[in-house]
Amino acid sequence: MSDLTAEIRACRLCAERFAATHTAHAPRPVAWFSPSARLLITGQAPGLRVHQSGKPFDDPSGDRLRDWLGLSACEFYDKSRVAIVPMAFCFPGYDAKGSDLPPPRICGSTWHERVMQALENVRLTVLVGGYAHKYHLGVKTGVTQTVQAWRDHAPRIFTLPHPSWRNTAWLKKHPWFEADVLPELRAQIQRVIHD
Ligand code: SF4
Image (cartoon, rainbow, N blue to C red; front, side, top):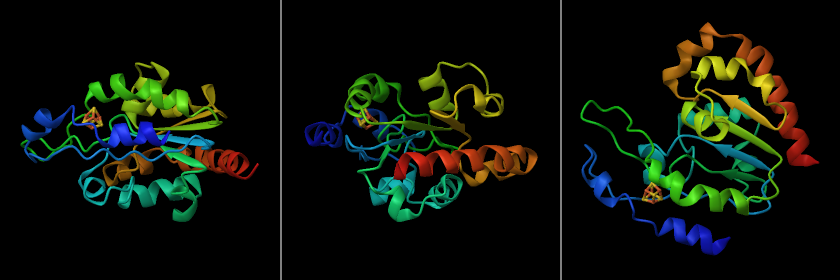
């Protein structure tokens, strides 16, 4: 496993792609997992702040996600229990309008199968955002429809929207998410983490 994380951290496959973005940054893969992890969180890709810190979800989105999951920062960052594997390990950069670029597909095709094989103790997977929903479930539905259908995949898989501030209006519009999905998600996480 340490060899795999070292390989990922050394990856520079997207160097040219990132150099051509508005942010013109170099790859900095953020790989955060160990084989004993029981909970897998798979999101989109690191943002600029995570790119700078090297720690996943080290930003306001992470604060909201930890609240959704019912985990303290200490529990969330315990690699022996929680694996954090985004659709791309590096910050994809911004376009000329300052919007996030999508996670490069080459990251998934290069690394994900090996990472998933290494995570053989995972008992609960949390898919955060549309990219993760589509990749891991093969669904073609939009985020709202996929999250609404959460019972189709629970209790082994939960589908969440992205915890970005951009989704605050979405949360207000869909109160069933906090009322119905989160209590069940938190209960399942406590069961898996402490069992
Ligand atoms: S995004 Fe993935 S494939 Fe691209 S450089 Fe980073 S680790 Fe490598």
